[in-house]
Amino acid sequence: MNDMTPHEIEALNERHRQRMERKKAVIDAKIAAADKEIGIIIVNTGNGKGKSSSAFGMVARALGHGIKVGVVQFIKGAMSTGEEKFLRRFPDEVSFHAMGEGYTWETQNRERDIAKALDAWEQAKTFLRDPGVGMVVLDELNIALKYHYLDVHTVIADLLDRPVMQHVVVTGRAAPPELVAVADTVTEMNVVKHAFKAGIAAQAGTEW
View 1 (cartoon, one colour):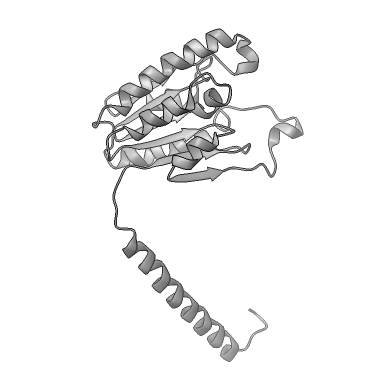
View 2 (view 1 turned 135 degrees about the horizontal axis):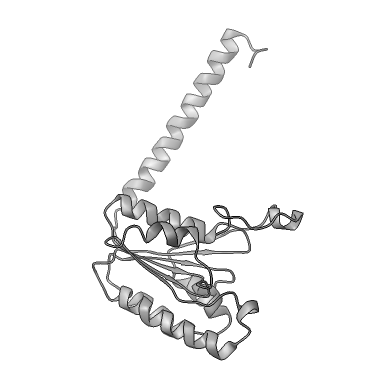
């Protein structure tokens, strides 16, 4: 930019203005066409970091709008996390249930893992039947489905039978294709770099 003449800068600015004008027209048309308001299913999956972090970011957003939230954590529960400690400060707005006993390589007991997953799904169904709960977070549900601790078709049937305006956020690696098919928004998070591979330990505030 420093090497450009005032005329060239003015021409560049005008081209930018015209591009943004065309882009605004396209985006405004899409916004006008998206006139439905309905509860959606959001799936965060993939091997990259940030699936649960994104989900709890949406929890904060929902709370800002006065929306009540129900959280069920599958697999997790052996240790307290930052999000649990924080959200338990809002018992009237958030009902938080960490119902796992740790990652599958730690528990090493499939029968007990299945029993815990089934208990967690019963709690999830309580939220999914309550129109007063505007958002339900099912953290690491995909892992429970991956290992067949829960039947994916039963889970999907319960999700589709929820109150019409209720949002559901599902996290975890390896989301099953059946769930992806019925979801409204699916994000796959991929790894570019991760500190753990450089020998940096998981730390409070960034990983848990």
